[in-house]
Image (cartoon, rainbow, N blue to C red; front, side):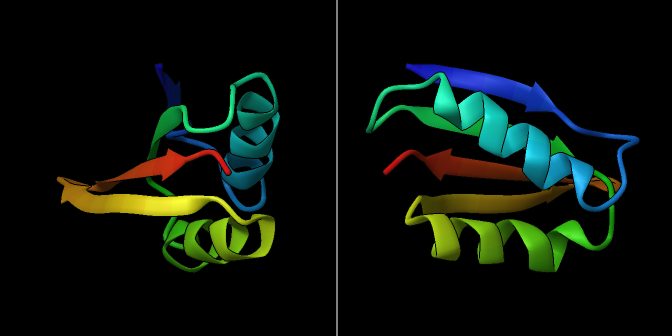
Length: 73
């Protein structure tokens, strides 16, 4: 299953906190696609994934936003 989270307009640490909360409702192996526009997310999202054991499968720039694909551990 793939879920979506639009965290644009939110500043650190809210994008990561909302992603963590959404991932709690997913099953191991599911993916969460997160859209952020906070410049701090470039550091925060990969760090969160590494600390929590989730796989950061893809990241891409989309205009002013970043799109992150996270696979739940």
